[in-house]
Image 1 (cartoon, rainbow, N blue to C red):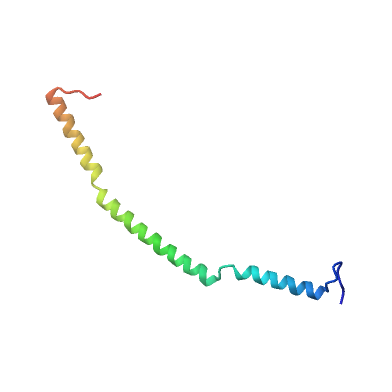
Image 2: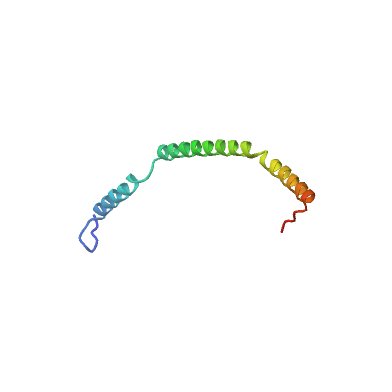
Length: 85
C-alpha cells in the first residue's frame, strides 16, 4: 500500500474519488427523466401546432377580403374624385 504526500493511501484516495464521482452523478437526470421531459415537450409542441393551424384556418380568407375591400374603395374613390396619398 503506497502513501501520498499527505499520508493517505492510494486505496483511500480512490475510494474518496469514487464517492465524489457518485455524488456528482446523483444530481444528474436519469434517462427516464429526460424521456419524460421529451414527452411533455412534444405534447406542448403538438398543442402549439394545433393552435397555429386554427389561427391559419380562421385568417386564411382575410387577405382576399382585404383585397376586395381595397378594390371597392378604389372604385368609390374614382367615382367620387377622392385621391389618396
